[in-house]
Image (cartoon, rainbow, N blue to C red; front, side, top):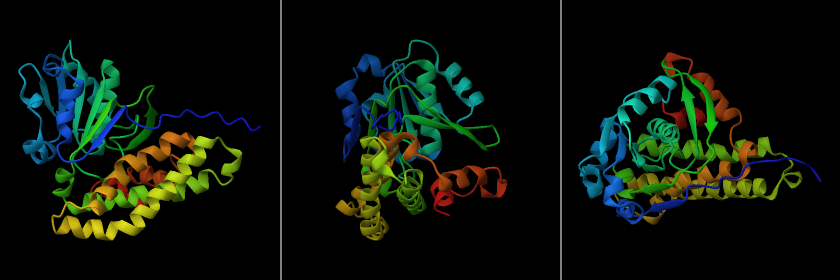
Length: 280
């Protein structure tokens, strides 16, 4: 029997994706715990989420940190210092770079992590890993953590109202999962069953995106919260993350993401989104 040990972390402990999902925060944490939360967010992200935020956001004692940097060692150290002592949970509100940073901070502080994605451009909210950068924004490596994220709260209306370029980038990034997986695992029958499950999942979300993306983009343009739109959002955030969680190194990173990482060295590519570069 072939010996290909892999580590399976399928996904977060809890995933909610529906209107009003933020209210589940109070199902898992007391007000006392949430008064010791660390909220990390970007300027545009918190503005987009403002009307949907749960009462916990305004609790006295909660720490609020506006973040503008990268997932770099210096930034995570600074955030850890700003967070202070006696904290209970890290809650990240934003896109992929911010969520990667908040995930790294939560592990640094030894706290559970709650992801609140405000765009569907990448699967960062789901995955138990962070991509590290230097202070210039150049990709260095990715770190897989020892535990899963505790919770992901997707509010579809926030993503519906986000600029369409983010959803388009997420579609491109997630489509790449299938094409990378079949290269990384050309003989899946020789690999653990979970790898094959990951490949099957990559094919399933590929089909969802090929069949529903055009309609989802049209629905977003028309500000209509439909099943097609929600399916595409979940394919990007949950489906894309699940592929790597099931297959580990056999379904996670191949040429498309390697090209993206190389492109980060070029300053002129900084304006392009992660998924746009991966799809390219």
